[in-house]
Amino acid sequence: MLNIEKYSLALSNFITNSDTPITIGLQGEWGTGKTSLMSMLYEDFNQRKIACSWLNTWEYSMFKGPNETTPGVLRGMLEKLEANCKSRNLWPNQDEKSQKIKNLFTKTTKIVGNIANQWVANQTGVDFKNAISDTSKLINSVEIAEIKSSISALINELIQDPNIPLDRVVFFIDDLDRIPPTEAVEILEALKNIFDIPHCIFILAIDYEVVVKGLENKFGIKTEENEREFRSFFDKIIQVPFSMPVGTYDIENFLIEKFNSLGIEIKPEEKEKYTKAVRLSIGSNPRSLKRYLNSYSLINHLKAIEQEENQLQGDDFMLFVLLGIQISYPKIFRAFTLKNNFTTWDKSFGSKLGLNPDEIQAKISIFGESELLDEEWERITWGICQTDSYLKSRAFTVIELLNLIRSTFPDNLDEELANAMAFATITSVDDSNESKAATLKIGNRTIFSGFEAKIAQLESEGHSEKSISNYSNFWKVLHEKTKLDSKYRISFAEYGASFNDDSKIGRGKQQLIYSRNPAKKSNGLGIWVSLNFGDTNELKSKMEKKFQLDSSDGLSITPKNELFISDRINIDYIKLIQFLISEIN
Image 1 (cartoon, rainbow, N blue to C red):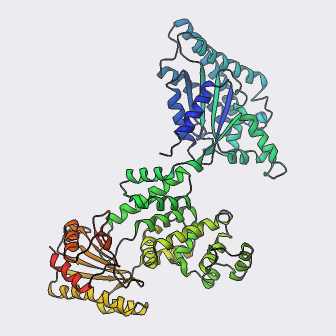
Image 2: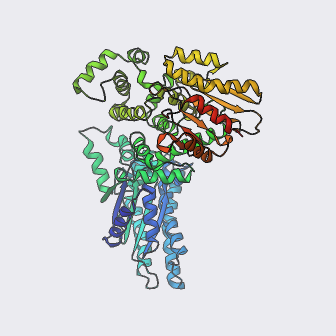
Image 3: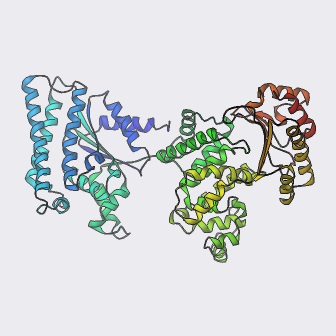
């Protein structure tokens, strides 16, 4: 899905035709796809004249001390090689040859086992870290030579057997970034003593930062002065470095395929918008993106089950972006929990966060004029980013992402932020007391007791007479209908209202019509007619015919098969609601 086949093919061809021995390092941070790339190579090599041995190093470090891990890894490499060869009928069948291979295998594993036993038995005698700090020693040079000789003889017998179509062996060493850095370095110290065995290729999934942390006991904290020592250690182990090409990953394809597998539909015209949100938040790390999509899928399942009758669930894209901010920029998300609408972040809000707005302005002045810093909320966002080492380098990316949100929701930003935050906070990991209190507050939605109270709210928020008139005309007719038939009920909430049929049984079956608050720019209403109402496609056709409309006039069917009537549609709202009432089943 990431379109990395070309890299797998290039590496496969290189390894198949290269001289041996050679060590290749697949470099990249956690979650960048090193294991996936190695899996593609492993699958390919199993179709060629190449024996494979795949080792997950963390499996050998679980519940073991570092002195037991390295011998376990060495033994595991041989056992995995044997298992791979036998599963592919590449293990010798002739008695004499088979016995020789078996004897070499037993001899090598016994040597490694004795080393492990020595370490366990003589806990106060052998210091593993010091014992292997000299690259010529594992325990001593005799044992190293014996291990290399046995492994070399074993592999040579396999390669030279005329009945076995093999010309090389590839050892895959995975998950070094999942074990403590010092243990990862110790394993590398030991393994590099056997990296020069003929016919062998070693492929290491490795994170350079893990190596750096593991070497700090030896070289101290990495600085510009000693960086060369760290790099020299790395270069002595790796002959061919290959950095994972995360910047070239096909994120859009990966995103859409994952959405499809989760049962989430993204319209073709929205693909670019979703992809941009990913690049401005999570980036190209596949594992982080999978976590991102799993959180999004979980919330969507929750929305489907907990569909409230008195409030629309909010826009999917808004929720998607907020979850990306939550995962990638937790400090920014914390600010959202304190004040949803980021465009209202001002000097007062900045002061509450412990920022000095005047100091921020002075520092920003060095950038000159910038369209990403010309509004107060953008400057406050930049200031928040300066308090975190990671965010500091991503400040303009964060601001660009927030501007993407604002441009997507120019008329109803407040409402969509509030709706999405009510769900996004469910997957938040934040131990600040302020954030916890704000999260509880977000969950408490305001429900108005009647039609008059709702109109008073709109007036207090500064809606125009025209927009309030449109809203009143629409809901007043439905309000009267509830008085005539007790099975109908209206719920007026902070950002919208719903018309419900309480005679219908089942979760989410009651809501017939929902409208959000009137838009301040168009003065119109955004209205959703649910499937509970009836056949929405048929209803759309009737509306188009009666009011002489077409889809370009603001009528559309949503992915949930609701009929959406845009706030910009040119229809008298009294006539519109009278038509809808006449169509109620």
